[in-house]
Length: 128
Image 1 (cartoon, rainbow, N blue to C red):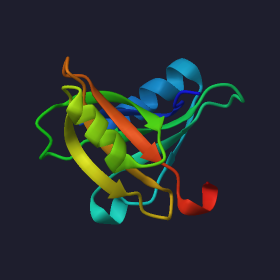
Image 2 (cartoon, rainbow, N blue to C red):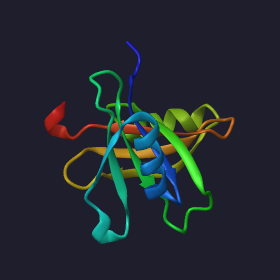
Image 3 (cartoon, helix red, strand yellow):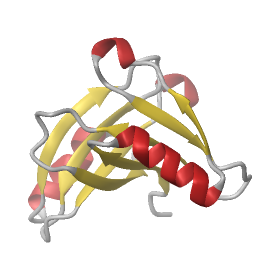
Image 4 (tube, rainbow, N blue to C red):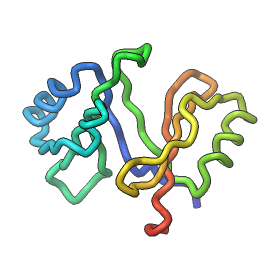
């Protein structure tokens, strides 16, 4: 069986405005997630539906050299193993493995050979 897409992220410099936009268009509820004390603002998306996958809207920090990004995350059992596969097949690592605060697992970002940015997600140990 292949690896499932498990999460999405919509990122932009104007994240709060995007929250308002998606709430108005689709009826999604937004909840500010932990991390604001570190200067990273993120809003969890509750689509008000049992269908689909979870996600959030992320306010991009100024040091990112792009102003918007849509990323989906693929669940894997070992981030580094998959990053090595990515690189052996012509992609490259953008963000190496990082722990998600609050024991929510870990993630990494990579670029595919065409320049698309995708995420890898590894659940926390307690969820495996």
